[in-house]
Length: 415
Image (cartoon, rainbow, N blue to C red):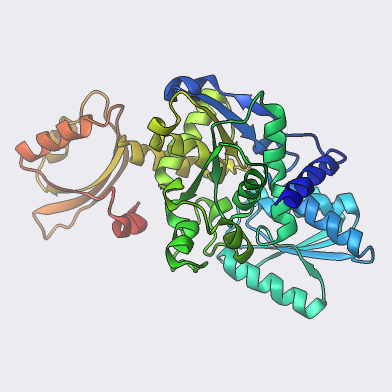
């Protein structure tokens, strides 16, 4: 393990020839909210706006040192690793073939092209990362190219460990707690290995999205297992299966130190950081901050570092983020309302709305052969408690309604 720590420090030193350290910034807003000293390790401020540049640099550097004749590198990525590889392909002046899921946000695709320039070509393949990964590996087998894993590679893990090297140099003393987002496990494995090598009392807390909790599943099964279904909203961490190499490192982690958070709540955190702090984070980049509300008792009075892993946010997604945030906070609901087909019925309903209630959506299907028509109505309000009063007024007035806000199937088709 001492060798791992030395290699990580060497990798971090070599990185300084390419890009500066990302800052560790004290956050007064979060510190006051949670009664702790909260610091953010701003990986979203790297040249490619994520920590992935570290693993890509280290793996390519070591591969080229071993085989200078290597000319082509291949990767599969939902975006951040792709940008890191593209950036390094231009730096080392080698060719890169980058496979990305078809569902990758356009912002990440465009930035990858910008970073790689003429040194790369992009292939959009598969709806999910694991399909993309298989296509990239098949290409490598066919062409004899070198595959650069986004996380399941010892050199990549070593490169990601440089996050720990930097933050320990930047803080006056080791933090009490470090919060790490988990996708494929490369960052977590690197930081975990580094602290295991150097010792100390820093506690590591791992957080993954509820719709992609592959670390939790792997520890429960005793080996990496593929999730049956992955929610791709947190695209930077939407990986169906933890890496074999990363699991080998992380298999001794205490399961109680792994937490999962809902995708909708992450949206509220993204908006909070954007509106209050002016910090742009992608969903995976907000994971470590979002989970603070679940560990308030653990971190109170302590020094905490949250790794904000990425800031590649496509602002075309902002309406969706706002929608999911409002629904999570209880500030927006959708109802199917049975409206009597008589004059004045709609006016009667509208008069029930409070001063803070606003109609965000209204679709009325009138069928002349029936006494009632169905209305899909979306309502926004300033206070979640207002919906309790509205429901009581609708019930007392004899209106029949159904709250479909949390009905996943109906929401998918109607909202």
